[in-house]
Every structure is written in C-alpha cells, then in structure tokens.
Image (cartoon, rainbow, N blue to C red; front, top):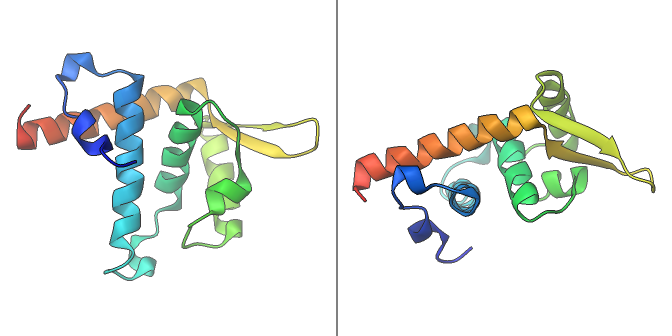
Length: 132
C-alpha cells in the first residue's frame, strides 16, 4: 500500500481500474489510521468497509469471504452479515457458494458501477482540492 496515494492524482479523464483500486486502498488505510486516535465506536461504517474491501478483492481478482470482511473490523461478524444482506437486497453485492460450501462475496455489476462512480468522485474531489 505504500506509495498508493500519489498514484491517484491523475487527470480526471485518465482514471482507470488501477487508480480506482489505489483510491480504495488509500481509503481503507485512512480509515484504519483514524481508529488509533479516535474511538472506534464513532467510526464504524460497516457498509463502506465492506464495499471498499470488495473493490480490493475485485482488483486483486480473488474471492472475498466473511472472514476477510471481518478482519480488522470494529463491529461483530453478525453486523457485517446484516450489512451484506442489505447490500445484496439493494443489488450492490452478489453472494455465491463455492464447491467447498464457502460463501464468497463480490460487487455485482451494479455495485461495480456504483463504486467506480463513488471512487471517481473521491479522486476528483482530491484533484479539485489539491490540484493536479
């Protein structure tokens, strides 16, 4: 993750999968850094953490399990499962079962579009704030 922040400052029209993935890594790292100085209870946003981790899983072309989504989380796994159900019902997340009966989670096509738009908006806000 080191050095990923600098790579996201590109022209808005040149944003591609690598820049969006870098932004997701940066957002996860920033959220984690906040948990030291601030109480975790006020920072809990399981839906955002889930979506960012699913962006990373997609970018790294690997399955994402509940264990990975819960890793480093400040909320119980039951809360993560509830949010996964909400995101699945909204059409943002797909759930599949592997041959060995594990459930894996991924962004749906709709979720990919939503997260690409959201991360693009984040990057553009940083370009507007800091310049290119």
